[in-house]
Length: 220
Length: 248
Image 1 (cartoon, each protein chain N blue to C red):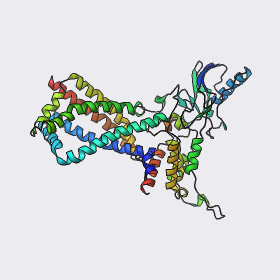
Image 2 (cartoon, rainbow over the protein chains, first blue to last red):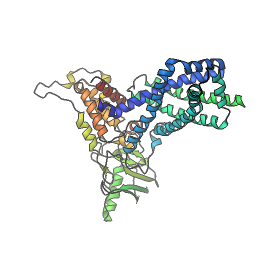
Image 3 (cartoon, rainbow over the protein chains, first blue to last red):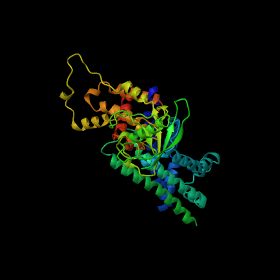
Image 4 (cartoon, chains in turn purple, brown):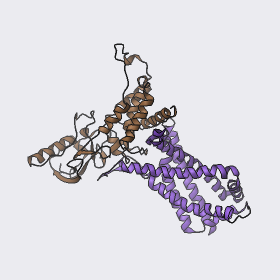
């Protein structure tokens, strides 16, 4: 078992599984956020459910936090080994001749997403923890919509969110389909899966950008 | 044609190398890349200078000995060819060509453009074989029915010549394409089943020990491989490896 944990194949396997889990979470996050555009009441109901349901808070949230931390830490672990594997760099390296920019720069798009997560947690998660556990406010199932759209009054914050979602798109364009290869899934269905992952990688971040811009424009 | 060559010169593994510029004239389009280097070396020898060391053997694209990084790509700009099969017609008069060794921690430079690829041999030794009873009752391999799809895939994997272009092309200097080709060529055939679990575990262990990087699935290895070894082999190796480990 020790050999398995240390092996490059198993590390990439685990990286892929955590990535696929985060992709699933992203889809669910998008669906809930999108309701803020079409129905503030539905958004409040769903947010209240996610913020107060025992199963979500006690089981899914810790798994999600673990998944996020694991994905980032493993990303750094893999990157360090990758950089050490070439002691002297090429004088001339034509990466564009054989691979996409996204695939060669996952660490940079990942770091941009990590920076965004710090802002996102500062904006939403920290105030939520303070509201619930420090200030101990009584439950108010109608507060979520107002608190969310208030964040998009700032053009700077809205702009940062839009830039972060572009990096998310770049990360997903390679990472989503790549994770199937890492878990050994390369067969007759791969072309269909690749098309689906590309569509997902474009539509979900564009949807998040739309939501941010929608609330920013509504706030004007 | 007239060309400017920028070539990596390095005395040995313990010294630092540097790029040295050599102008060359009279290069014909029908010359192979290695013949062009032969002409350069003739000139250097005539001038009393040290010739540029580079690996070569069959010069027919089948031995995997030649190993040059040319203008940032292993085996140069053409696809599905080794350096010895690359011809100077792929360049034009006045071009500057940057020539470097394949770079990886697991491929230390021996001299100039020659690198030590014995790490590949050690990966092969770790499990790239099958055991065949040679007591006199050996069964002819052709007497075992194998479906054509598997036979074709096994043969395609077996065309890997172990040149190291996959490692050279990979931004992580990963040897996953090479190792997976060697795993796949046996994993797909009945003769390879007996040692299948040990093989993949041992070859991956050796690959990691040699200091190669991880696979980021950029696909650069597949594009630059002179034999067109498919990324499907890496997925197969991942499956084989996880399956072998979870079975205990």
